[in-house]
Image 1 (cartoon, rainbow over the protein chains, first blue to last red):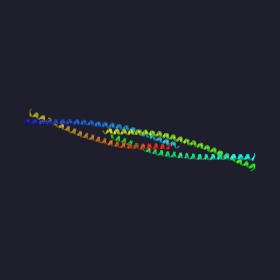
Image 2: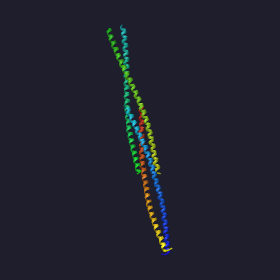
Image 3: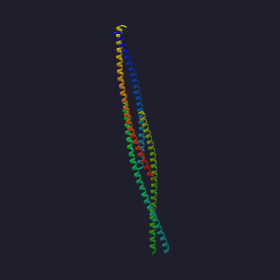
Image 4: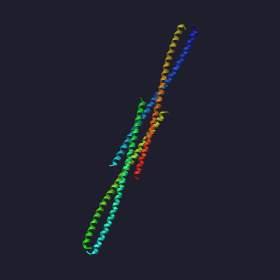
Length: 82
Length: 82
Length: 82
Length: 82
C-alpha cells in the first residue's frame, strides 16, 4: 500500500472512533439521566406509600372510634330497656 | 232521736256516699287513662329501641365494610412496595 | 218506720260510706304511684334522648374526620399523578 | 513514517474502535433495559393510582351511607321527643 492509502485509512478510522466516542458520551449522559429519573421515581413512590401508610393509620383510628361509638349506642339501648 | 233527725242524718249520709262514689268513678277513669298512657309510652319506647337496634346493625355493617376497605388499602400499599 | 229500721239503715249507709272512702284512698294512692312512674319514665326517656344526641354529635365528628381523610387521599392520588 | 509504524497505528485504532463500539452496545442495552424498567414502573404506578381511585369511590360510598344512617338517627330522636 502506498503512504497515501495508509493516511486515508488512518483518517477514516480516527473519524469513526471520534464519532463512536461522541455517541458513547451521549449514551452515558442519557443513562445517567434515566438513572436519576428512576431513582427520583422510586423516592416519590416511597414517599407516596409512606403518606398512604399514615392515612391507613388515621383510618384505623377512625374505625376504632366508630366501634367505640357503636358500643356506647349498644350499651345505651341495653340500659334503657331494663 | 226524733224521726226528723233520723231522716236528716240518712239524707246527709246518702248524699256523702253519692259524692264519694262519684269521686271514685272520676279516680277510676283517671287511673284507666293513666294506665293507657303508661302502656302507650312503653310501646313507643319499645318501638324506639327496636328502631335503634336496626340502626345499630346498619352501623355494624358500615364499620365492617370500612374495615374491609382498610384491609384492601393495606394490601395495596404492601403489594406496591414489593 | 220504726226506730230500729232507721238505725239499721243508718249503720248500713255508714259502713258503705266507709268502704267507699277506703276504696277512694286506695285509688288515690295508685294514681299517685302511677303519676310518679309516668314522670320517671318521661325523665328517663329525656335522659336517653340526651345521650343519643351526644352520640349523634360524636357520629357527626367521625363522619367529618372520615371526609377529611377522604380528601387527603384524593389530594395524594392527584399529586402523585402529576 | 515507515510502513511498520503505519501498520501499528492502524491496528491500535482498529482495536480502540472495536472496544468503543462494544462499550456502545453495552450502554445501548443498559439504556433499553432502564427504559423498560421506567415504563414498567410508570405502568405500575398508574395501576396503583387506579386501584386507589376505586378505593376512594368506595370510601365516598361508605361516608354517604354513614351520613344517611346519621340522618335516620337524628330523625328517630326528633320523632321520639314529640
